[in-house]
Image (tube, rainbow, N blue to C red; front, side, top):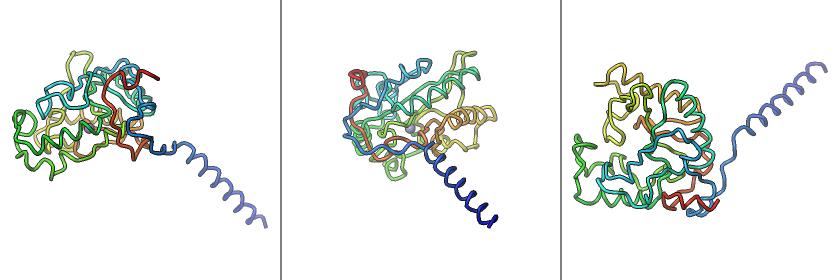
Length: 244
Ligand SMILES: [Zn+2]
């Protein structure tokens, strides 16, 4: 009898723990129209200490032109990812860095622009971003895809800016470099300091609820992202989130 009671108590405790655990994980939100920016914020308002260097608004990117859908040099992101990024920014500052953001939410229109580029003969930026690869393999090898996690709104590309030196931290390879050098665990010709720097960024992001990607040291997605199945397509512009 006593044993049975114990078992029952243990089962009840397990159920309580289970429900406590599951309530910690926010449920994924249902699909909303892909032009609905109501759950997004301007990253610069949510994380004012982050530095923005929006490469797809500039011409310094692998295409060599401003990318469709980038109407302003700003970054938009879901409220949930912004909250997590705020924690990452605080941790970075405690360690002497600021976050430098290259990209966050990326409209499907921009991804379509990448696909068009992958199929045309523009190789203007080859020497900077894909010197080792023929452009024709970028799609097949997964460097360019017809959908991007960034369009779901909870992914960010970033590096660290060193507040002492006033320079970007040396990660031993540039953002958007197509090659093994970009794999976070690549050790090839990287120095110990460069490997260590990648680990500092990775630790900061993982400590604050993001998960890494095994092919790009700069790319992190919020665990339990709120819109795992929605590929948004409103422009990158403060106006997109201004009415809220
Ligand atoms: Zn990315």
